[in-house]
Image 1 (tube, helix red, strand yellow):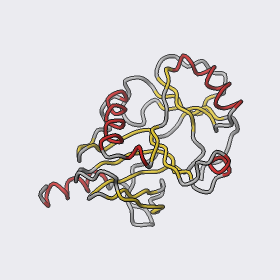
Image 2: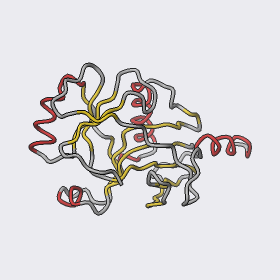
Image 3: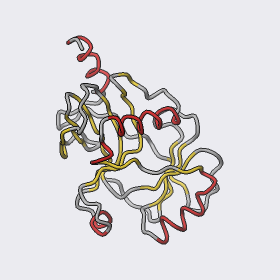
Image 4: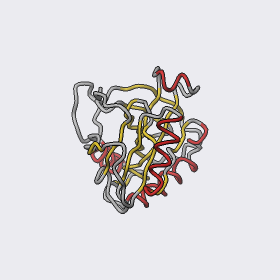
Length: 196
């Protein structure tokens, strides 16, 4: 990869300047929904009780940043291939929810916005999901991270009862089928909380 290609990748990845000096993509705006709102089409995922994380993979190292750009942790990519990626998920570190499930210091991935150095935010959610799973497997990240499970929205009531009520998840996230990054996302939370 040439220096110009690397500079172009960094320019695409580093979009918002913040006080920490690390540039991160803005977190999508979520529409909040009441727990019993019927969801038509699309997908639902469990809402993991962690910190929003942007995972920047470059030169065989994965660096985890918060939504404000603060560096949280780093690790060596198990199967480094020189490719650049930006993945998104929840970093669980120090929360009661994660500790009570043996998930402290775990990474739960739900999307990808840069794949092999290319910006894929405009790609439909289904294509990004395939790229996420492929990237996690190809780089051996499944040894250190989990891909957040996804189901058709039609089973949201059952998932609410099982995951949220019975197993204590924070809620569900609904994502529109065919949507670009951050478009048509809504969250359904068990309790209304203030984001940090």
